[in-house]
Length: 321
Image 1 (cartoon, rainbow, N blue to C red):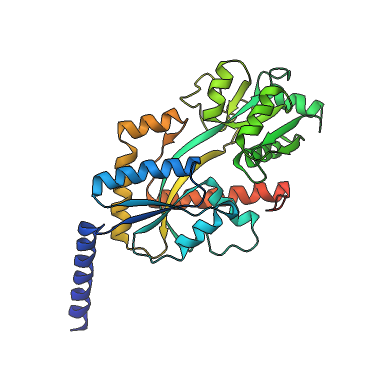
Image 2: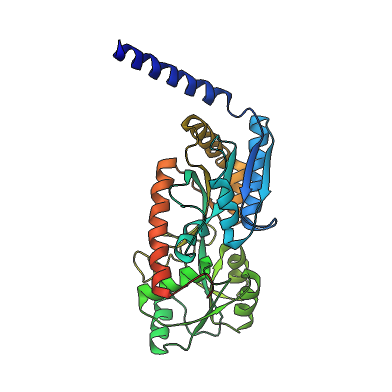
């Protein structure tokens, strides 16, 4: 009798999951962006929201909750009802914050259900044309011959360019001086002007500047050459085996969200990401579609957190420096 009751319970549970998967969503979707409007994460989230609205016929509303390098918005989603209707779109900084901030108001692993890695984009090592280095190997040799004399810019402490350069320094054993800027724009202006020698620049900025000769592109931080700049080698193939550092966007639900809702959301988002117009839009911004499974994204996230923790530790980086 007990066995029969258990079987009946499991059948009812499975039936309920099937009904949920078929009916979801039945109301508005809330997409939290942990940054102010107008940035890359916000633009990407709004494009995704528009497509979800079109395909499901339910409002998909972007809710900008900026502050504390993305932690305020992430905390809001971590504490939201786990019903599949509140989600987070976050960049790679989501995996950095646990190593920089001593006391986060959430657990980046336990409080979220990874849905998919949406897209990824590499950085580009660019140097001012006056720097006598035309390859990654020549840059490493020059930095070793002139320790502490070459400076590099970043878009801020703990930013992807900062982390990417610190990892590069660690893996090559070189010493360069960090000059943080308040954003990517000022750093790009100064490497073009020669005020700084080197900058790990985002692809969208780097491509036109490199093609016009205003900067020299030495390598991309993706594991392989990137379609937007096919003539520029990957850092890993150009002298630093195993080097990789990419910007990425991820989609998360609160932990405990129904598996049926998560599965349906993942399937629809993966379909949207592979639409020709979405692929073209991402390519124009120097990004490629990833659309990983929830399991793949969860494993990737743990790898990224471990990598960033190592970089933060060796660089002595904290939230305030």
